[in-house]
Length: 229
Image 1 (tube, rainbow, N blue to C red):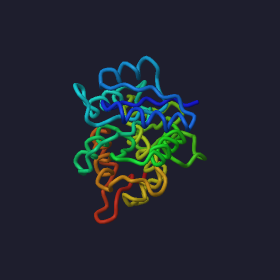
Image 2: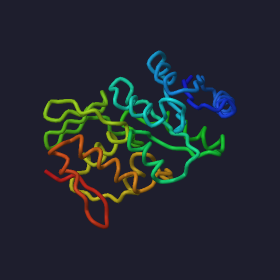
Image 3: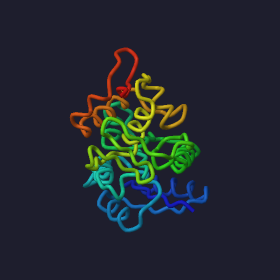
Image 4: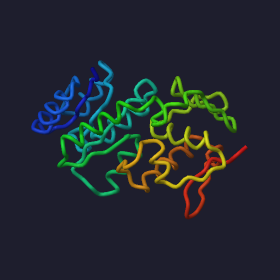
């Protein structure tokens, strides 16, 4: 049985989500504040977090940022729940490491499907399950089994999405991939993420990789590639 933590300050939303996910066979815990969410995550680590963007006190963006910066918690998929549809709000959540977003009002069936997708993901976040070995390139070591990235021996904290993009590009050095191809590779087809959000993830990756960030090259009008050896 999978455990789902749902964070929202609207009791009706919590009841709706809990009812539908429990029908799917999940164990659901609900809280209404960001502070309680962080306590719940650390007390009883869930398999998936559904997190409202707008919360009293510590908001959803800050909660997500805190979780994704913690090496012990960063691999937990976070699905942002938001009534806002502006790209800037969605990208704000993705930029701090959210793995998916769902806009209100939502279909319970779509929500359940998104949760199932999150639970199917490998530790790397990549849908292809045949590749479990690590990758080493340009002084970057990607340890898939431990979900760690070492940069010249030093650990680099990455979100699940950043990790997935880095692994995908590192496994295919020299090949150029469009933004949509990257989305398809790490999430599966028909994943509702804007191409702009891929740019945000790449920007974050480059910053975290420091001088080696330039190894992820932009090919104008096409997409991105990892520089070949």
